[in-house]
Amino acid sequence: MKRVTLEYFAALRDEAKCTTETIETEADTLAMLYDDLAIAHGFSLPRARLRVAVNGAFSVWGRLPEDGDHIVFIPPVSGG
Image (tube, rainbow, N blue to C red; front, side):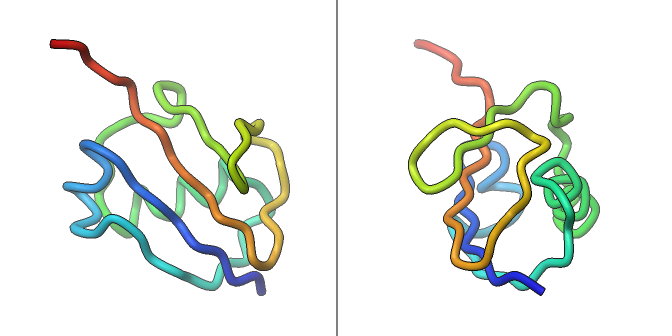
């Protein structure tokens, strides 16, 4: 079990009803973690439309989340 801090922006923040949360996860990859969160929070954005960053650096979806990670799911940005 790993304890990670998650940060959400834009639509994800609205759907999660929070900006950050700290959870314990058994997910083997960041992709699996997002899929679990999508079910829990009802996220409408598919993973393919997002970027993910870990501890301040862009990462790949296949990365293993580690205890203490700060994970940010970044939705597409619209200009205006």
